[in-house]
Image (cartoon, rainbow, N blue to C red):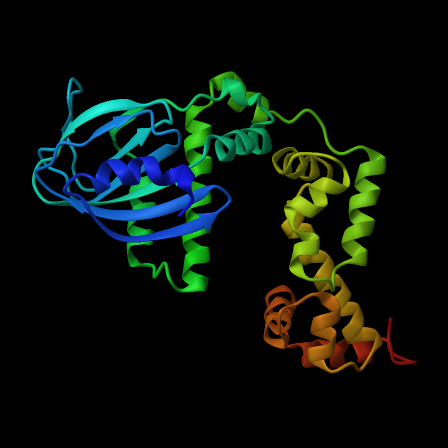
Length: 302
């Protein structure tokens, strides 16, 4: 794990806490699962932010001078500059998510286009948030050593931090991020749509929100909002629509095998193409191809 996250590790490592597992998630994030009982740790400006959620127990655990105590599902937020002294009660298990101040600043710029210095993370002890409790329980059942499940943990943790960011933002900052002020310019709209059309069969990264936003020099958040104003749908919905449009045209105009047609349209597999066609038209690709062929046969009724 990065040295940036060793300060809390060192505090708990000198205490009675037992580290059960850990994972570096990249992007300035790390996870550690702990258990502890009857202890007295202290935190002194760890230099990184911490989200702690109780998985089990927590009863009798409190921070000196602060009302409230731990319980399953409740959470604590300890900013980088935080200081506190704790009395740990009966046996408990909890998960820590650590992230760097740089990761917090980048998230604020990306999601809110806000000045990072204006996005302070407040201390919160023994808070209640069903979404964060569910995040912790999701992490609990994942195998952090298995690459695919670690990616799930990473995605879930990013979503948890997005939630914390929006909670920490002032009403003015949130309104500024969410208020629609207009759609894409004509030039930007044409550039994005032409790019999508040219890359429907490309790897998924080519059509990611980040890639599309970069084409017109916008943050991902603002691009998604402005695209919806312009196109009355999300970028993902537009891409799905264009893939289906190309697939139907391919069924009508060619006899390509389904696997090849799926690849040309950007579907992960022939079964994904079949599902999209059936959902949209209530027919299998073979049935739709036959009907389209019959409709365009010379002498067919208009």
